[in-house]
Image (cartoon, rainbow, N blue to C red; front, side, top):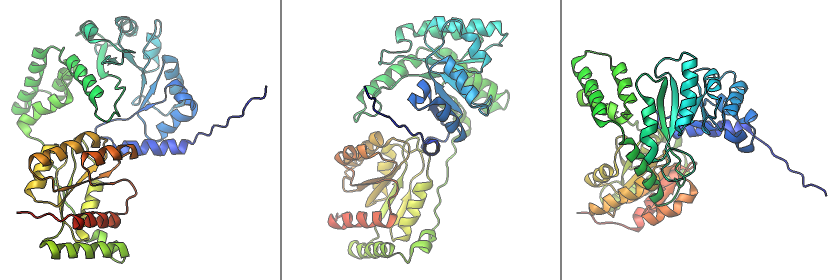
Length: 419
């Protein structure tokens, strides 16, 4: 029987570009785990692992200890600072190999921790020196410790143990669903697991951090490590210090004239500027827009470019501070009596945050404010956003003057009287 030929072409340059792009849109403090498990999903570990390392990956996710050893061998420049996470866990007799090759194991069964602790003690590892990531089952029922067995597993990370609970993970198996109901249920279970910690011990550690910040006596790093080992979250540790020092607020600045200097001879730019002037003459004031960032999206370079460009085309532009809530953004838009609220999204929070800000505008009686969204918005999310009340979506590659024209045409087609 004649077989059908199959040709597979792996473009590692595209993989590297994709990885660099993803790192550019995640939160500044976040690290991206490059999943190359199962032979890079059949695309060749030998090709894909070195490619993502060249692109800057500091974490590789593999299926097994054997695959982790292979990944280390394939990436000699990975270095000790980079990490290989064995997502499939360890099996009997593999603990020593985990330590020998500098791998980080995921565990969820007591016997897996037995294997790692035995190997660590045999190697003379010091207290809390062998990192382990704990997987919690929040509903997928495939891998991970359930809430009923969590206390037993957590007890293994006791004082004096060579094991360090470095990370907690779960599998969100429906993270891209439209309403997010299943994911919210899973996160609620994860939060329930977090509450199984010793609350009194956590509070004591956080209070010690605050006292150190107030008095200047003690070692903040040491106290932060103690709090983390007692399972305080990063946010709680930061808040303990914020009580004394406050929180840094970045000052957002724009520079006028830069965009127009390069685009003033462009016909579309001139037309947008003319329409903005006509709108101002008809309405008695210039089209006013608030450019906002919500949630943990800290990437504001693009929003500054948009704000500067629209200002040069005749808009009156406000820029909101980073990390605002939907309620804060809605209030800012209403208080500044804007015509347009432009939401910049680069951290995949649009399906959650945009409907919330539209709802907050309704509570304030300001449904008249035009809500548009720009940034990295997958095409499959457009319909959901439009049904939620979004008036326009502008993805990567949008020509800014054309976007301004579209917004001005929408405003002019539905004039709104304001008191």
